[in-house]
Length: 150
Image (cartoon, rainbow, N blue to C red; front, top):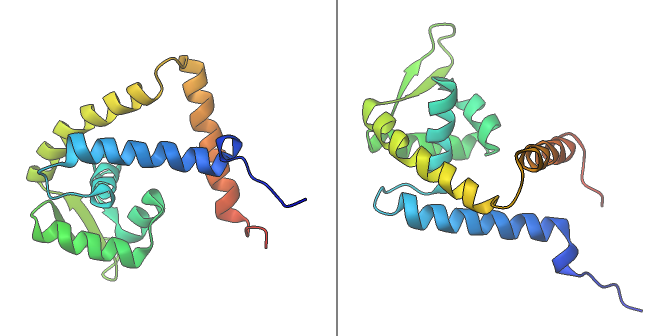
């Protein structure tokens, strides 16, 4: 008997389907006309939450490669949305922070992000939402520290 996989019950597929829908809706409703894509949005969101950060920290928070972050930061600098300066602690480190222009943009986009999360989790209790987030964080930790099966 051939191996079979029911996608409607396969967790990676379900997670990807939800993620893709969230990205599509947020891009359509929030990012349209901003010249941002989902990756640059994630960088701005990370900076808005955690303050000035090193590029390596942004990569860790956003789960993107450092080389990708470097290209995104260059693009955001050109757009006037972030500044890049040498760290006061180490001359070898670069710290990235939001400009006032980006701060205003992020403040406009965050409520849209929250409304989209609310729409996606409609019908889930506060506890179910917390449990879901906790489970997803744990799954990410599991996959980040272990090699996937062959």
